[in-house]
Structures are given as C-alpha cells and as structure tokens.
Length: 119
Image (cartoon, rainbow, N blue to C red; front, side, top):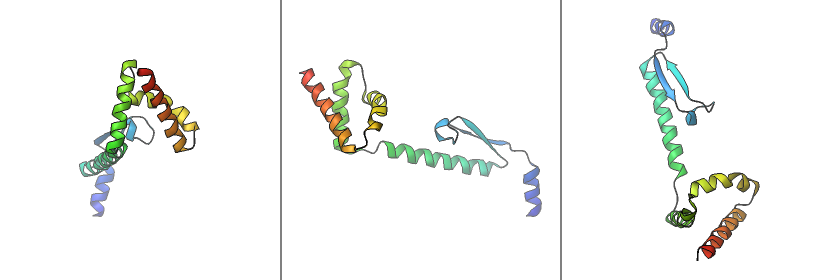
C-alpha cells in the first residue's frame, strides 16, 4: 500500500478535467489535473451532479407561472424583446426593491399597462 502511494506521488498528473467557467470557483474556465483516471472521473461526476442540480432548480416553475411567462413573451414580441432579456435589464432595479410583493406589483402594473397600450 505504501509503495502504491509513493508511485502515485511520483507519477505526473496526466488526466485532465476541463471545468467550465460557470462551475469554476474563479469564474473562469479551468483545467484540473489528476494522477489517476479514477480520480479525474470522480471529480467530473461531481461537476456533472452540481451542474444538473443547479440547472434543474432554475427552471422549476408552476403551470400558472409558465402561463404568465408565455403571456409576457406574447406582449414583448412586437417590441423585439424577450422575457429573459427584460429581466436581465431590470435586475439592478429589482435588487433595489427589497419587498417581493412590491416587485410583483410593479411587474403586474407594467404588464397591465402594456396590455392596455396594445389594445
């Protein structure tokens, strides 16, 4: 056992795992090197699990929320906008409003005004 550990220490790290920027601790694309394929595969499996867990939690919405998104998209399409683009642009403003109920009220007011204007 001790002999195997010494061999592993002498061995060069030859197995590379490429880490995408969104999963990296630094926010930049990285490469991690491992001395054994088993270590590299285990690390890659952890990355896949974390990516899948994060990705699935982002888009879990109810049927009523999905309907609201479709309605909002329908309202924004004539202006060449999409819902996620608008949310991205409004994010700094929304972060300044602390109350979630107030954010909902503001968004609904805007959507109602757009509906009235489109009629």
